Amino acid sequence: MHVEPLDIEGAIEFTPRQFGDERGKFSEQFKQSVVHEAIGHDFTLAQVNQSNSTPGVIRGIHFADVPPSQAKYVTCVSGAILDVVVDVRVGSPTFGQWRGVRLDSEIRNSLYLAEGLGHAFMALEPSTVTYLCSEAYNPAREHEIHPLDPAIGIQWPDLGQVNLSPKDAAAPTLADAAAAGLLPTYEACVVFQAELNSR
Image 1: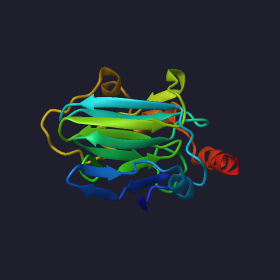
Image 2: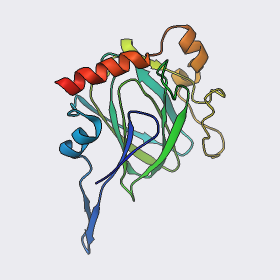
Image 3: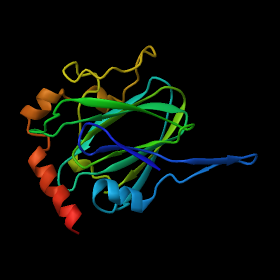
């Protein structure tokens, strides 16, 4: 498996080797030893989510309070998406920046996002996405930022009219979320990562 850290700390792309013959293909989609080496601790699986989306659907930007927040290992098991990580950690060297990775069912790559990072994606075609989550969903600790916030400036592909949930469409901008004290701090995330690495 090829491991490629993004230049936003805590975001890592994992691309598996594929083995094929006349029957089809096989790949290792998640391997604890490889993930442990990349992130510094075991990935604790608490919940698995799956979504189906039509082209133009954007889900996110979502993040959770730290600690414990929710690390994610995201894979597009059918179709293709632009998967996006947004650094919403106040005080981070890359605060407010985003990076996008195409995830699709041909390459079978996955994106890991550490606790405290924001996550969003756009479906580029009819797509099914699976998320391995380190913590169970807790609505009281979950927050959103508007995915079209011009201050973040995510360059979403032009597929016509975007499709947002009512909750995401009503989400605050990054600046408004910061002013409301909703964003995690980089310092809190570093402390929590150190705690995870020491377990």
